[in-house]
Image (cartoon, rainbow, N blue to C red; front, side, top):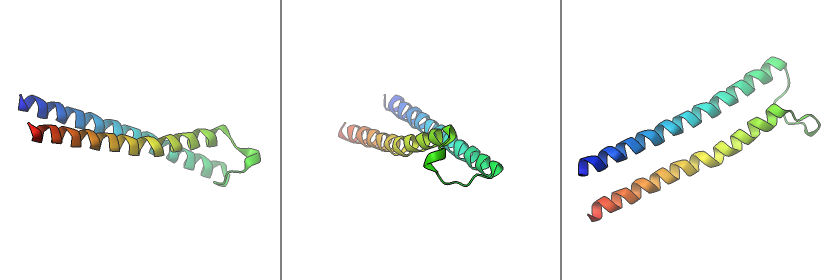
Length: 91
């Protein structure tokens, strides 16, 4: 029974890690595409309120969501691991 729990926790940790890496890579690729697109079009990397493009809005939204979601995801995984460790220790 203990082996099943540790395997389940191992799978959950692997899944969490893979999701984290996938989201992080997605955000990094978007940022890289934005930077390459900006340098190729010779437009400075400043946000001019009169000329805000769809690309700027989408990248800003992705960065905000990533900045909120990734720490929340890490904290939830850490709390879950703490809770599981406390439960196992009590048994």
